[in-house]
Image 1 (tube, rainbow, N blue to C red):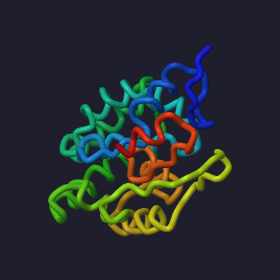
Image 2 (image 1 turned 60 degrees about the horizontal axis):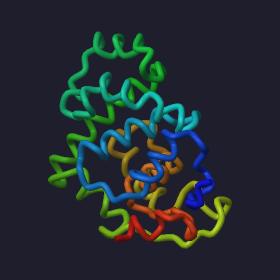
Image 3 (image 1 turned 45 degrees about the vertical axis):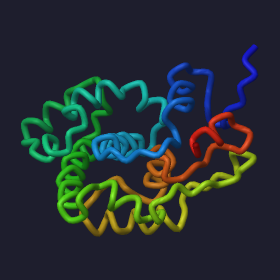
Length: 190
């Protein structure tokens, strides 16, 4: 019997467990990885995160290993090819938003030097560590995700509402929402 305590949202699916135990909540400062999470979180809107995790390799392949420069240059033919790809969620708005977001992502990199420098300003450069003891205490949004989302929309991003951005902030370690009893809670702070 496994006595490891994890956050309440983790199911028994090995993919979910591996994601929780190795990635979720770990601070990310690599622009390509941040772009990956923006694409994946946008694709997840209205779906379960597990659905997206199961297609992560498909997204990696379809979106040029999450290279924003390449995705930003997708032609209409490139978009249509992705809309036929069973390895991803073939939602026209979501696929097109990945291209739009890649273009806006590059503009932010140009303005701030990196997307990382831009994004982490919304948490003053340090992860916010919350102290929740139950899954129902974890919010869907925060004042930081509201501000981040609003600024992204102003810059032309799509599928970056406050709920999606809060999930992105959790995934990339801008917010530590591991429950206090979870074995990862203290590990991601180290």
